[in-house]
Image 1 (cartoon, rainbow, N blue to C red):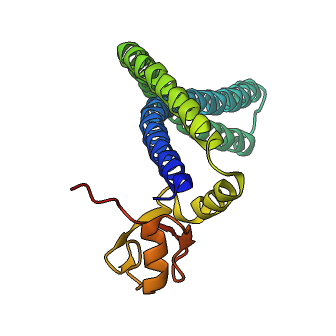
Image 2 (image 1 turned 180 degrees about the horizontal axis):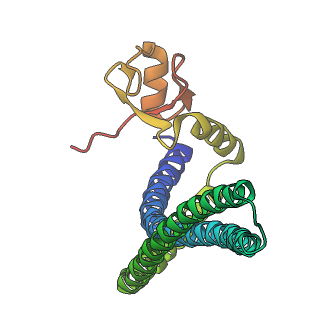
Amino acid sequence: MHPDLVKLLELQAKDRTLLEADQALDAILAEVESLDQQLADGEKAVAQAAKAVADASRRRAELETKLENFRKLEERGKARMEQVRTPKEIAAVMTELDLARSILAKEEGDWMKQADLISGLEAAGKEAEARLAQMREAQVEARGEIDLRRREAENRRQAALTERDSAAGEVNRALRARYERLRTVKSVRVVVALNGASCGACFTQVPLNRRSQIRAGTLIDACESCGVILYAEEIVE
């Protein structure tokens, strides 16, 4: 086998190890993201509950203002009742009083409903806060274990990267540039063994003369169809 291909195969092996380290670290980071999302959902539920209470409280305050206005109307109506004398005036004031009392009763009913609603919303908010607190407490141990695994995964990745960079430095610069260009399209499997008379990646037949030179280690060649760099596996007798 061509000496540069030996070094290139070593680089490819290091890239596979680095890829595995990246995937392992990504999986751990996904766990962290999942825990973060759970907390974010819990915090959102608490915020929504607080907003619902604030909106309901504002509505209750508006109702209280209306109630106060209608109570004043009722008091004015009672005061006028003491001042009027004719049956017609008395009837008019009574009609106004009945209307004011009817509206006042309805508004008081709405106020009571709103007060009950606020009590329910406040209870729901406290439950959301309790769930969030429990979730945070439950995640403490899990996050500690994940942090440990993440540090280990980061160390493995750094070691793999160091070894990869060291292996890359041993490869012919032009060949390495060619390899790196192929990796952008074909991930890390870009140096592929011949499969009999064919490319081991796409199984396109390689001409005999080129196969012979590849096997003799005198030629570094690529598949004319898929572009991978070809090599011949050495047979150990």
